[in-house]
Length: 186
Length: 280
Image: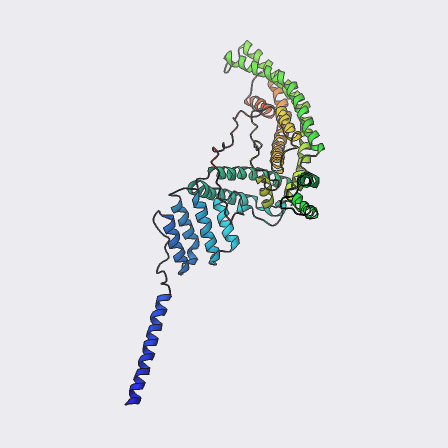
């Protein structure tokens, strides 16, 4: 009798231990997002919180569409502080391994910087840029549109946008002259 | 800024915190290096400057030679229209006006034929010199990224300097354009690399366009001269005449379009600019 009750006690303790372990495990594993859908609404802070949550719970493959969505939401409340908000978000994305440092920098500069990431290159203007001059100018034009969104519509920073616009015109002129001077053989 | 300029006042007044003199001298070379300017790009050596000046003089000579005959043509054309000679070519008065027009036109073509080769030589020489400098200094020594940094003025620390006006010298006399170019460049001692790059590009592309226009006009002149000599016997004014005169005016005096100004800067906003660590 004593042996049977001892066995039952051990089994009971084991059962309770396993049950408790399973319950704790369920609580610490975050619930995976059922559907990856970018946040709606007009509040940027809330949208960023939801985005962070979704990125941590399996939606990292949709980063670009989430980011585009955040930009659209931010347009609803243009202010200078939005630059810092997006900078912090991209730094977080880098820390989480969603973006490399270079990608985070390029993304920030594309929308909120004066310089054009479309002009990034490792070789001379004559050898690398001029053979693709039309393509480079198209990319710059698109980037100017992105800067209009980031600097004017989101950050209300007209001065920086003016500088970016001026840089576009000067780059276009100087590249046209340089490529004409480089000639077709370079 | 040389080392002496930095360290002399500090030695005379004493370094704050009482650091020994030897340590100051060790620090200063680093300080002077950090404020040194980027090398100036060599886009306008003296030869190019002189070529621009010479091209301006040639343009001025051509303008003065043609000014009176083009003025005469304009007057005669005005008289032809005011006398309602269109469709009335049989009238003896209209015939006389159209013959005089034809004569003036031939005279203009002859002067152009004589002067344009010199103009073409001067423009091409300027263009060729600039092309060499631009290819080397901008096209081969820079990537598009460093070119952008030069334009934005970071290399030299120049930020909010006055920017040279971009393309758009329509409506300006040829000689005035070259005078303006010469003044821009000759007084460019204080200008940054970004301004020099923009000015050089502007001049070079303008030279290219002018050169093409001169070449096309020269081709037209030979043909137009022959046609007008034939027309003299008939006393008609052809639309081609008007086109050639218009083309000559374009070369000398520019087109009639108004210059499209650059976007004016928005009013300066109070500065508390956010600087992200992600800024490239």
